[in-house]
Length: 197
Image 1 (tube, rainbow, N blue to C red):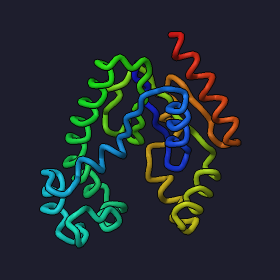
Image 2 (cartoon, one colour):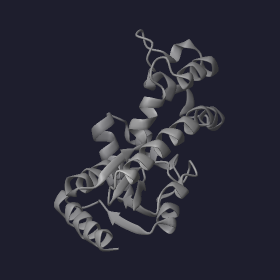
Image 3 (cartoon, helix red, strand yellow):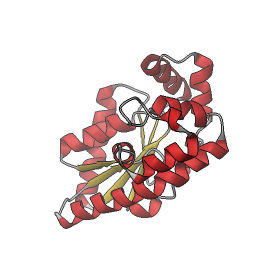
Image 4 (cartoon, rainbow, N blue to C red):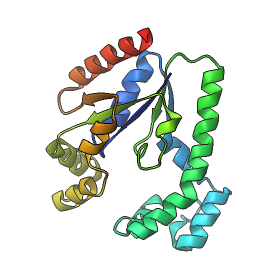
């Protein structure tokens, strides 16, 4: 079985994924694949530089993710261009990794994909777990981890697909607003449930 894990920004998707890995699940991360897709020498990185300019490249020729984020964050059309270039390559890598793990006999594969719904990747997984947290928790985490002002943290939360919509499409939901131990316990319960199915 492939379990897709998604949710909003700063809800704790990676924490939940780590707990599944500790219990024995195989993990594929869309964020890791996204970095791999734009490594120096890749066709996707060349396409990004052609589209957004050489200023998105660091001195060593790698992608300067912050420079690119500055260009696309407030511009939906530019974000769409970014996605048009990167999503097909991420999809190809994801399909490749997931197929390899299936063939290797992995009982539970977790595909952590923050943009699972936005990238129309629902068909890649059997079930979807949405990790949630209260808006105030999301804002506090963003401010703490990224040094953002409150207004900027709010803007990042509001720029995403509403959590309520992701929850509506979910098979399972884990609220990660509480303690680490509460979340770990919720993951253990779901892991046992999925291991039986």
